[in-house]
Length: 238
Image 1 (cartoon, helix red, strand yellow):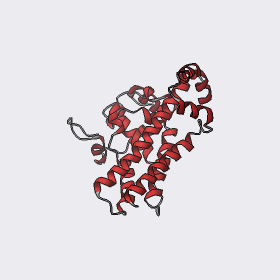
Image 2 (cartoon, one colour):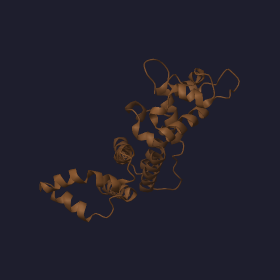
Image 3 (cartoon, helix red, strand yellow):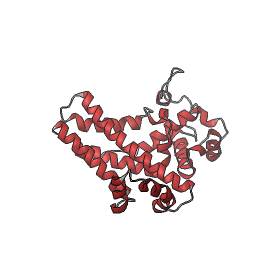
Image 4 (cartoon, helix red, strand yellow):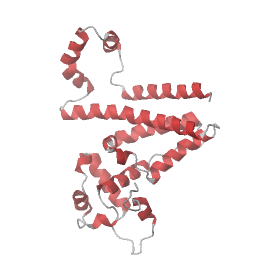
């Protein structure tokens, strides 16, 4: 992300290197950093650890990234390269496919839900490509520019909100050394029972007693997403 300190990472990387191609490259840096984060979490990704895994001098990665912020942008851009829409989809298929694939991406790279606000909003080339594809699908509907962006951001916010909750549950299960969500509910049962015994939450109690998809996160995600898309279709007449 560009700052008042000067040009952005992407502006620097666009310039041809005056030196011959080196063994180290932005692609190799990103691949290695993502592998560390996938295996051990975002906190394990440091410039020193990165240099060690790359087998280079501690300062070598700084030829491409100025620090941790640049590195996170490079990582985000690297994984978002996998998000592409097939041709021939209508607006709903495009947004739905993009949402589902983003969820899959965030399940594969759990650290995406833990990024700082700056990293989450980073304007990387591959993230811009994702936005462009979504907006292109909506542009065919003759919507005004503000409405198109609102629809796109609403879907994006739904995905990241759903995954923030799902990631928090997963992190809590891991921190408590539990096996799954069912075991987590067992741990929380005494507190939940106290709440239910107050009689203040009859609908929630009905959910607890009758719901059959408490652990079906894919179904929950898809259902919420379809409700959102149905709402757009009805509101906008598309």
